[in-house]
Length: 294
Figure 1 (cartoon, helix red, strand yellow):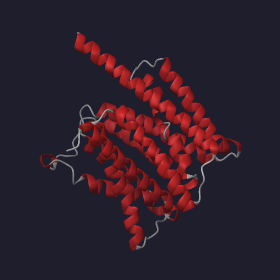
Figure 2 (cartoon, one colour; figure 1 turned 120 degrees about the vertical axis):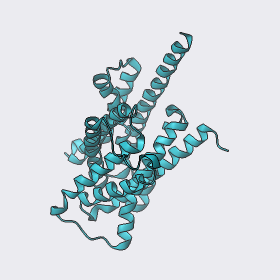
Figure 3 (cartoon, helix red, strand yellow; figure 1 turned 135 degrees about the vertical axis):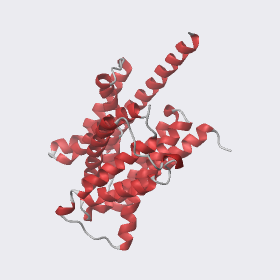
Figure 4 (cartoon, rainbow, N blue to C red; figure 1 turned 60 degrees about the vertical axis):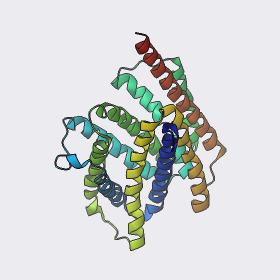
C-alpha cells in the first residue's frame, strides 16, 4: 500500500507524462488548423469529465453561483492554451517547456495585485532570477526579431491568472466543474474557426488528435490528485522532468538540440520557481504554527 506522499509522487509523474505526450502531439499536428486541434482538446476533454462527475450531480452538474469568475478563468486559460499551441508549432520543444516553467514567477506578481499578498525579499529575488533566465532563453528570438518567442511568455501570463482564479474558485467549486467549463469554452471557440477550413483526418490521425483532449483531461485530474495527497513543495520538483522529456522528444523526433543558453536559462528559471515554492511552504508553516500556538 502506497503512502500519501508516494501516491502524490505517482500522480505527479503520470500528470507530467500525459502533459508531455499532449505537447508532443500538438507539435506534430502542424498540418491541421489550430482551431481544429483546439476542438479535439476541448471536446474529448469534455467526454472524459463526464466519467468522473458524481452520480448525484448529473441532473445539475453545470450549476454554479460564480459564473463571472468561471468566465475569467476560461478566458485566461484560452489565451494561455492558444499561445502555447502556437509556440509548440513554431519553436523547439525544450525552449517552450523551459520558458513555461516561469509561470509561478508571474503568479507571484499577480498575487500582489489580485490577492493583496505581501511578497518578501526572497520571492522578489526569485522573480529577478527568473526574469534573467527568461531573457537568456529568449535572446535568440530578440536578436532575430522572432515574434514566436513571445507566445510562451503569453502562456505564462495566462496560466498565472488561471492559478489565481482556480485558487479562488476551488473554495466553492469542485475541480471537475472548473475543468469542464474550460473544456467547453475551448470547444465553443474552436467552432468559430470552421469557416477558415478544417482538414478531414485519417482514422489514425483522428485517434492521435483525440488523445490531445484525453491526455489534457487526465493530466489535469492527476495534477489535482497529486496536490491532494502530497505537499506541493514535495512533488513540484518532479515537474522539471518535462524538460527532460522535451529534450528527448525534440532530439529523436525533430532533431532539435537545446542550446547552452536554453539550458542555462532553464536552470535559472527552475531555481527561481523552487525558491518561490519553498517560501510558500515556509509561510504556510509559520501561519500553521501561530494558529496552533494561539
